[in-house]
Length: 129
Image 1: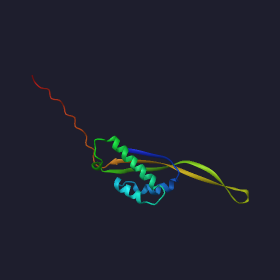
Image 2: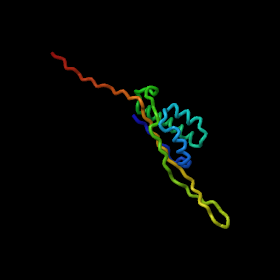
Image 3: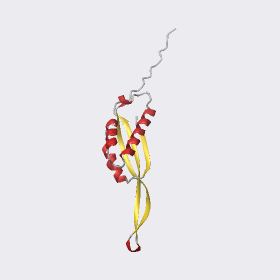
C-alpha cells in the first residue's frame, strides 16, 4: 500500500530542494529521517516534516499493520516548480533588474517493501441435516 503526502508553495527554489530530495530517494524511512535531521541545507527541515506526514498518512490507511513490520521506504519524491514572484531591483543609470523569487511543490510517495498480509476469506460450510 502506498501513502502520498504533498507540500505546495514552498518558498525555496526547486533546484535547491532537489539537492535534498535526491539524498532520501529510495531510502528506508528510518534512514531518511536521520539524513534529513542532520542535513544543514535549507529544505531538509521541510522535507523531514513532509516525511513524517507521509508516515502518518500510511498509518491511517493501514491501521491493522504494524509500522515496524511494514518496512517502509521512499518510493518516489518529485520536486516541481511552483509560482514565481517577479520583483524589480534598482540598477545603475535608472535601469531595473528583474528578481525572480521561485517556489516549488514537493510530492512524496511511501511504499511498503514487505508484502502486506491479506485477510483470507473462508467459505461457510453447509451442514447436512
